[in-house]
Amino acid sequence: MRAAALYSAAGALLLAGLTAVPADGAPDAAGPRRAVAERYGTAVAAARAAAAGISFGRCPDAEDLPGSMVCGTVEVPLDYTRPYGEQIELAVSRVEATRRDPHHSERKVPRQGALVFNPGGPGGSGRYFPLIGLMPGWKRIAGAYDLVGYDPRGVGRSAPLSCQDPGHFFKGPSMAPAHPSETYKRERVARAKAYARGCAERNGAALRHHHSLNNARDLDVLRAALGEDRLTFMGASYGTYFGAVYATLFPSHVRRMVFDAPVDPDPGRVWYRNNLAQSAAFEGRWADFREWIARHHDTYGLGRTSAAVLRSYERARARLAEEPAGGKVGPGQLQGAFLQAGYYDDYWPHRARALSDYLRGDPRQLIAQAGPVTRVAAEAENASAVYTAVECNDAPWPTDWRVWDRDATRLARVAPFETWDNVWTNLPCAFWSAPRQRPLDVRTGPGELPPTLILAAERDAAAPYEGALELHRRLAGSVLVTERDAGTHGIAGGPNGCVNGYFETYLLEGRLPGRHAACAGHPEPEPSGGK
Image (cartoon, rainbow, N blue to C red; front, side, top):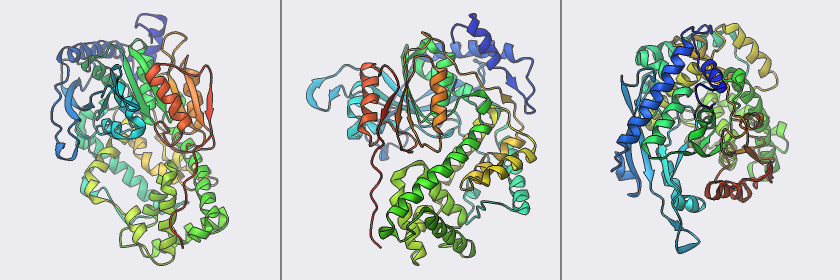
């Protein structure tokens, strides 16, 4: 997520920002030399990709896909200091621009090139993104752009990472104490150490090359392979971070960029402090959800106040701790399902119905919504491995467990919903053996970068709104569009017509509002079913 020519004044900043940092956080003296080599390696790889292009053809899983989507691969160096060394293949998918105006079927529209998308994660696959052009709200964009998705390095079909046997990935039922005991903490520390060790043992020296700087370099090689002189890119969530890294490293290669649900790119917050901020924000979104349930007590019967709804939730947690639903769903699975509702409010009616039914003696909806889906265990394990590798490699982390324990204990007093689960997700980074990067100082000056569009929901918990403000401050010429009083994580192409108007106008015409713009929040979901 994070310059002008290498030999300009900005070049010195670039060299400093790319300095590698070992696991103990001390700067690597070879960093500046490495940065020059990586810059050269990226140019070599991009030139090679431009000459080779991408041979698109039938997708490997074509029986499940519409025939309009085609697939191919592009080679990138595993290590950009060795562009002629080991290569890995990135899986790429595309649906060509329809060249049709959905409002005037007989009218042809000009093709504007490729729109490349990344859904975030780290660890998210974008291979199925091109199919979004089938949705009514995307047809104008699909008319003008080839829609391009891909699996970033380590993800899916792109030299996938793994840190443990996928057969052991879904461990359930599990507990999720909001205020864990010392015994439970020791158990989770041991598991984090074992997971970090598994990542190192299963991936070897390749593990160190999975980080946001290389994701940005890969994006430039993909741009070249697609035959695009300048990139049109849309990133969501984590995709905004390495998109901003790309904009900082390759500003002259940018045509248009959309940053949807931005994470905070401040180098001092990547990633430890960002995760603390995320846990605090989820507490507010969990309160929003409870208040919505309380307003619909006549439908769900879970309480007429937020506090009463919380008591219903805690009653379910206690019951599941004693007897997991269907032998699969314990407090950990319940918490995971309700965490999803913190990302997307269209989950609210379904989660509320499942909780209501369970407390009245019918666990079927809860098992269906919260139970582990074992058929996707390999995919989920891979996404977890890439998430861990990228976040751990991207920046220094505290290596003393006491720091994590102190910070989480304090935060959990006021934000118990997500704090400790977030700790357990990221704790392998405390015991990571691969070298760390020093986060790039994402920043562009006036005129360095074409105008870019930032979209953010004011109450987004996964990417707190302060991150959008910070990204806007750092990217000169960017414009921020805010969805007020809403918290969905990622708002482009969603239910808000005002947001979509700005989004379409920018991608199709290159026009932005002259200053910050605000849209009223989209309507809250309607409750489903009766008591």
